[in-house]
Image: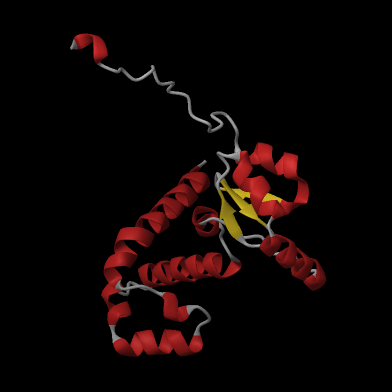
Length: 167
């Protein structure tokens, strides 16, 4: 009976995926139709994420009817918008974010120099005044966050200022 046992041929553990192809390599190969951000490959005109591991997926997408239609619409609009990854968007500091930080640091410095406790920032009247009369004044956080985040920065800045004046 053992003579009639059928065994399967040895299988190959070879995948059809490219091991060392990066999205940036495919951007250079396919030209201006694709862009890379955060290790992901995006189609500019369709605004979708493509699998960069298999080249056939990208070539099939570029040849598809939906891509050609969206590419024609995209060229008519003449607007170059590129989709960004979430990490790249979060790393971008806008002017509003930097202004917000400077307003908070100035507020903490003012409170310390005037000997005003940071808990006074929690009072609704103070919060209403700052929101209505100070640009980015509504972004001033509660006193516990002021102490944890911004008080140490103010302390370090003042310490460096005193050290530079001593020299």
